Length: 311
Ligand SMILES: [Mn+2]
Image 1 (cartoon, rainbow, N blue to C red):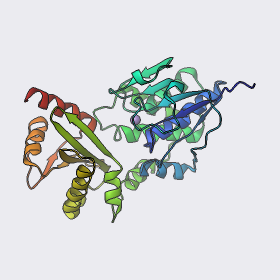
Image 2 (cartoon, helix red, strand yellow):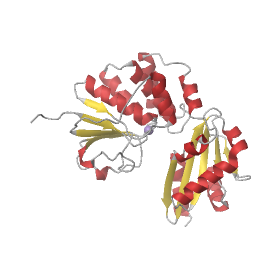
Image 3 (tube, rainbow, N blue to C red):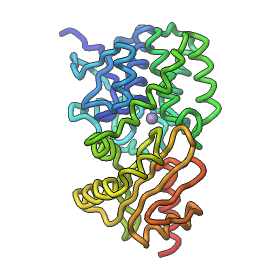
Image 4 (spheres, protein in one colour):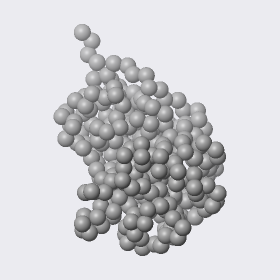
């Protein structure tokens, strides 16, 4: 019998640009180093990821060929993984999240969890430290994934390593100048039904003691105009999602990529109070603005800490 050598490199279902770029790049890195690998992604990638893939004419399918092992990139829990993933086949995990569930993977022999701004940074470092040849498209994908995941280096999760990775990639290929702006514009397209599609496409759920939250997040250009013209719709969509997922509370955080401000929308007094306490802001007419950027993954730990200490 022929020995199957292939490694499948993949990430969560419906991945963002970081997941897509990391999967493609890591498969390329392994193949360049003599390890037969292929990247596949499952479910529809985010609008932003699709935009950059189309721009570069990069295609990636959900086709799989026989494989012996799986590497997960930008993913480290079993939740949200494609159905095809058999957990025991996962031998390697490369991710940048605090909340992992490594206990589900019984055959892991290589785990790299580092709290950098993007998984793409960790993949870029592998190319850099081994001086592995990188293709033009892969370098651009990694570059844009780091820009996206770090909110153009404005996110508090940005590290020196992310910045160094960008410098390295820029030394290898010419990054199209207009790409960051056009990529951000692409994900800011909220006309008509796209608003609901975008909100539903990025919902997180969190439970702390007796409180459960449905938390929306949009990263876009033009938050003020959107809130001005469509606040009631945003509230309605959020409420629909809250009911659908049977969560107790809901709010949404709107990140403006150009002004570097956050706008929060929340209709419940009790939750407004919590957010006012942890983020030091004031709600007026269900809207509050913060003059800096904070990501949802930073708000939830603050909320947890606050609720567990004010029981
Ligand atoms: Mn990521």
